Amino acid sequence: MRYPTTHKQDTRARLLKTTGALAKRQGFAGTGVDSLMAAAGLTSGAFYSHFRSKSELLEAIVHNELQRSGKLFHGKSRKQLLRIVEGYLSPAHIEQPETGCAIPALAGEVARANDATRLAFEQGVVTLKDSMATATGREAEAWSVVAQLVGAVALARAMPSAEVREALLEGVLGSVREQLGAADLSGEAT
Amino acid sequence: MRYPTTHKQDTRARLLKTTGALAKRQGFAGTGVDSLMAAAGLTSGAFYSHFRSKSELLEAIVHNELQRSGKLFHGKSRKQLLRIVEGYLSPAHIEQPETGCAIPALAGEVARANDATRLAFEQGVVTLKDSMATATGREAEAWSVVAQLVGAVALARAMPSAEVREALLEGVLGSVREQLGAADLSGEAT
DNA sequence: GTCTATAGTAAGATAGAC
DNA sequence: GTCTATCTTACTATAGAC
Image 1: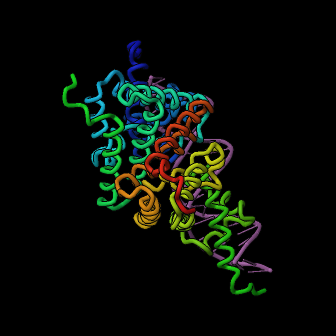
Image 2: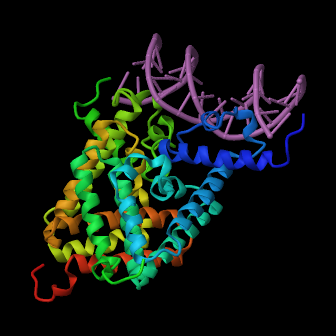
């Protein structure tokens, strides 16, 4: 029985989505090929028709996820960026890593991954920084904002107390608001 | 043959040091009990005389490491904090996670650990934030500084290009300098 | 307290049927 | 392209000798 020619790329796209979500929630190293494939309704035997190894999957996930994140921030106005940042620093984003940004969720594992994976990660992060720079003006300040966002989410997810988490998120949000120039938004277009 | 009564606690201290270093470099989940014990010159059989499980070890490592970090920042003057921050954001710290701060190195794994581990982590982070608050004045700004430090190190370790890493570290350092009030350090004691 | 040996499980990856 | 079955290796954890 033949499969339609689009079947493989469709399956690959589905795999990237489901395995990306699992990796962001449970960690990539901590999730076996078996579980990764089961999440997409397949068995581990089929895995190697799509990826040569598990580390190649991580590379594909990072590429896919950071491209998605990049598009979310790209070309946005100062006002729109502020909205996105508010969502980024929200309790909902802390509690749902599987649908959230891959950068804080996977940074630790990417640091120990191969060059191709780290390069894909870097390109995504730089794109994000560039988007931020359209609002901050200065490059240096854009890096400061990106580091704050990533650090805040990574920290908040590791801390059990809701009060502490909220103090952290609120503090960082206030600081980022200033850096994005929220003060002079009143008479600005979209 | 009897061991001196201090032997067990000495060994435990040594274990916390060596396994902490390994966990910070290779990741905790990615390092087997065998390797962890071998790093201290012991075999895996002896592990369970010191810890009831591997997750109990993580808890002990986090407790030990964050207490160490806490002491490094505690009671320091604005000027001293600035020095420490410069080291924190240095290429040396990025390249040597095993001797560095456990917070960016282990945050991802702690986020998926048990409550006791996450609580120990949180207490360490709050202590660090409190130390920062002596220099920033405002609590919110102290959180901003802590998030920036952690985010910058986590990101830098995952990015392969030295140029990009340095732009990130420099940008964040400049921002943190301002928040720590580096401008008015001229006529200040120690 | 530490060793060797091992139980039991789960991992990454491959082979061959359909 | 996906399945089941399996190889090999590594893991956490335990048992018993010293």
